[in-house]
Amino acid sequence: YNLLIDAGIKKGMHILDIGCGRGDVSFLLADMVGIEGSVLGLDLDDNALEIARKHASDHVLTNVDFIKSDLNELSIDNRQFDAIVGRRVLMYLPDPRRVISELSAMLKIGGIMIFQESDSTLSSKSIVPMPLHKQVDKWIWDTVEREGGNIHIGFDLWSLLTQKGLIIEKLQAEAVVQTPDKPLPRAMIVKLMLPRIIKTGVATENEIDINTLEDRLTEERENTNAIYIGEIVFLACARKIG
Ligand SMILES: C[S@@+](CC[C@H](N)C(=O)[O-])C[C@H]1O[C@@H](n2cnc3c(N)ncnc32)[C@H](O)[C@@H]1O
Image (cartoon, rainbow, N blue to C red; front, side, top):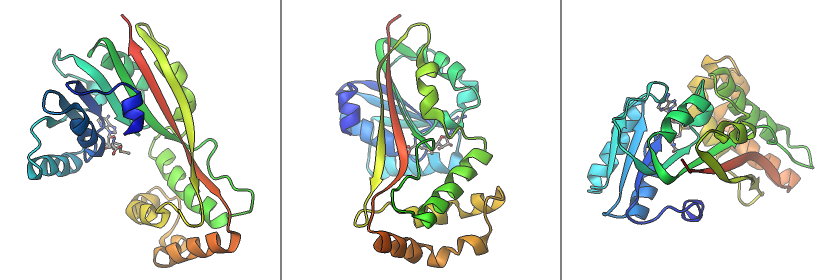
């Protein structure tokens, strides 16, 4: 929320949320732009879009809409947006530079693009050895990579956004720090990703042993009583200047 405020999201803006998934970011934006503004969420996953649309209708949200579209074959009429936002989506695109260039054409002059992307390059770090935490992160990142995701996208953001008509206003990276009393729900994420982890051949059900994973992670945290950095999150903002 604060990142979006700092990036200049304001009441009355018309925003495109690319790769909106279930709409978590779209709903946050819809709240920020108010009824004078609007948010259009775009994704190609029917199931995610259905969940997003249901949430919007259950909460009678009239300033947010969702459409099915493939970013690799963009064809959104000539609507112009004040801001284009994407969270954890560029990493899945085979040619993000081209997509950014096409999105730029849909941005008003003076409009802003805001991307938040996770990056594995500096992740899985601890001073005290935490092998199970490292193993879990490796399962997650290896799966995304085998599915074609770019797990070093953060380091590519500068060159991706250095394009004609755009000026990078902010590029920052923040470590996600886990402490023994504030862990991330890693076992839950592994549980959600389990079919994908197995399908990509990253690990077997026996190796993961999902029913005991949460307890084993807790035990490792309690035994080490140390900080662990699971991932680095990059934020990039670029303004359209021409
Ligand atoms: C990790 S999820 C992030 C969802 C949402 N931005 C969030 O942060 O909650 C990535 C999303 O990008 C979507 N996506 C991936 N490739 C896409 C493409 N070519 N066109 C449209 N959406 C795409 C996926 O369907 C998925 O919903």
